Image 1 (cartoon, rainbow, N blue to C red):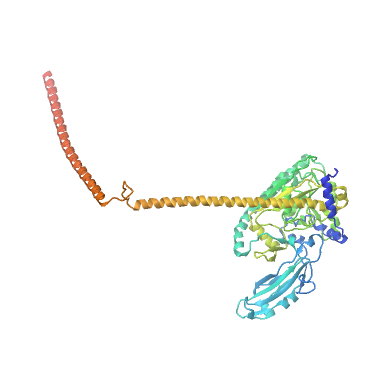
Image 2 (image 1 turned 90 degrees about the horizontal axis):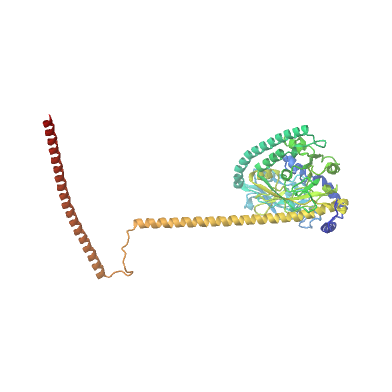
Length: 597
């Protein structure tokens, strides 16, 4: 262990100032340690929504009436430690459903207050045909079950027979955790959701290809690993594992890319005293990263050489995915066990004791839950109890839709809306790309004080990761703005060029058409129009020239005819002369033959 540098000493002093003094707060953090270890359901491996939702808080909320002592309008927001202090109050919300649908409100997560302002049932916009349901809604709301109302005509009567009616409730939520609200844009409305159907169909096909690639990579990696362990036994009880196979990792990465998950990995420069490459992730026993989505574990496992992950008990029994989990070396912890926190810490310590440089590290999410990705939550201390160096990393999603798993989202009009795993899956499959940037920092080596105090250790690591996360977000937004500006400029330039080209062609075509349809105008030597006398003289000259040309043409024709006649006579004379000569020659030959005979 090297001695801490001056910068590290200053960093440790800052961590001391952040140290939590309240023993009750520390106890609360200790109770949440069992949730921090990157549960397998939090990394999106299960397709079962119930497993995916197991890592969320149990929905508990308090319904209050306006002006009551516990109403957020009449009392201040409770002071809660760490992440609980980041709560806010949202303005009133409206939930309106047709009479043939069930009105469902809540339940909400722990600590959130629901203030029902008013409610009615009847014809929208016509108060004479509406029934006030405020008192009924307040009495029917339950902190554990929320509000569920159906069969409105039986409960409230029919205020407007044979007319379409709706049930409406206006409410306000308080103490909503700001980091539990997704700020990304969701595809709302029937038209927007209809546009996602082609993307879902394409992803169904590409996902089959990805599963085939993953299965092929697993089969090849399993075979090669078995052969290598048989021929060249490796050190250790388990020898080489399938997760170390390049074929397995490539197949796993192909599956992610077929689902539109495209990670981009960068590394910070290492200090001079480190003798390994920045991309070597097997030089620290633990990797810590911020947690936004169910797919974080899959993305990091693909980008970082398949590190180990702690998961809840029963993960290895999930069909198909349990096989991959087993090969990844998932460490199971039974959260139903009252001693699960101690079991989790023991699993981490066992991994640290068994680990050595070159072996796969353990990936942990010290925040203990997912957030909207705008900032880092307070860290739990479980990952830092062993007091060994950790490798921090930060991730940031840059796609058009942020796959953050939160309980709420902001609607098109700025209203707060509850969201769940079903809507998350729909949005995930309906968007093409889910690009993510990952930045890996140098190893963080704790000081003696941080080794003795895990919370001090956790605060120091969080401080470094928060700065890196802020820089990553800023740089990502800057690049996106530049790319958007360049695309807009290029589009404008292409549009201008196209407009000029089309305009020039239209003008040229119009000129050609006008030239072909309109007879040419006479040209004058002078720019001024000629006088009447000049026009008569010019017309007379043209007439004289025309007559002269006609006479010359007639004379030429007569000469040509006489010359043709003479030529014909001469040709006839030459022909007759040739015929006479040939006849005389024939007579002479005959006379010679007769005389010779």
